Amino acid sequence: MKVLKFGGTSVGNVENMRQVMKIVNDGEQKIVVLSAMAGTTNFLVELYELTKKRNEGFSVKHKIDVLKEQYIDVVENLYKTDVKKEAMRFVRNRFGKIYQAIDENPRDLEGYILAQGEILSTRLFTYLLKENNIDAECIPALEFMRIDMNGEPDRFFIKKTLGYYMERYPATIYVTQGYICRDFYGRITNLKRGGSDYTASIIGSRLRADNIQIWTDVDGFQNNDPRYVKKTQPISELSFEEAAELAYFGAKILHPQTVFPAQRRNIPVYLKNTLDPKAKGTRISSDVKANGVKAIAAKDGITAIKIKSERMLHSHGYLHKIFEVFSRHETPIDMITTSEVAVSLTIDNAKNLDKIVPELENFAKIEVDQEQSIVCLVGHEITKSNATYKLFGVLKDHTVRMISYGGSSNNISILVDTDKKVEVLNKLHKLVF
Ligand code: ADP
Ligand code: ASP
Ligand code: MG
Image (cartoon, rainbow, N blue to C red):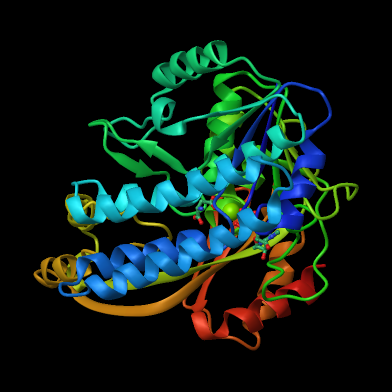
């Protein structure tokens, strides 16, 4: 069994959906996990925001109609047979249900609205397979994908229920929704933006798949962020650890948690380009040991906090006191550096910053810098390579707020102002590759 996940661009228009059909139609049994069509989830986020405002009834209705028209257009162009009628009925009915849900305003309205993109794309794709006489069934992720109280996949439940659906509706190709799931209380929620990759990995691990394939719009993992750096190169092999570091530090191609379920069962993950299936792509596995820098990545939205106090000198328990404040406000710390009388650290969730700062001010002087980015170099045993020396080449022209070295042998990170990020990424690219 294989699990293939196709992202938003891969199902983003009629031609690409047909291309996906070609890729999956090789007669082998598989699970196909789909994202929403490109743009839909963003649109649904806006729609939900609109429903929260009072007296916006008209614009909510207008917004839903705009999306509905887009999908009607897709149906018009995607099918050639009577399947079109059935698909059209499905789309109209779905949008009717969205109106109704907004009207009824259930507690999980946000989850419900955000789930619609994946529900639409999977059903439309399954109709397409059926129209082309391909043996397929669409199985509902909201029935088998569940997270527990800690937000972790409920592994036992997923395995059991997914197995039940696959047995009950036997097919060569099972199509299902990425991203969406239910929480511990049964409410509709999701695995966070970009979460379809994670869905594929969870399913792959539960079914002990031969491999997990993430199909997207680039030729695999690139050695730098292609949105900001020209002439990046695909990386043919990455270890699970390297891929996890890169995903965590901002490489958008993979949802940060994707690697772990696959790694637990030692299942290789392939990254492939839907628009160029012959391109080699990237293989992520446990048997990669090559040393040296593999890639550069950047993560935005970082806040740096400097905590300064003379009382720190020769005292113990000081770090504990600081960490306790962050812990109580459920705020994870990413980078950390210390000196005799100061600690600098970064967080990527500043939601509780206004509570944390006053508490820290009770015993220290605090400086906060927002709009920071972590830029990192990732590679197996990177700290033993000459990358470190090259990294310091950047410091000649740029002010770096923090450096993290030695926390992991796979990663060296620096913190820079976000408005300098693109420059730093390009400079590093030149120095390292
Ligand atoms: P999908 O909708 O298929 O999930 P995403 O937009 O989530 O696609 O991820 C693919 C995008 O990730 C690429 O188009 C690229 O712009 C971006 N990206 C960022 N860093 C990297 C990287 N190191 N390698 C490849 N792509 C990257
Ligand atoms: N559709 C969701 C998003 O846009 C999930 C995904 O694409 O993986 O975030
Ligand atoms: Mg994605």
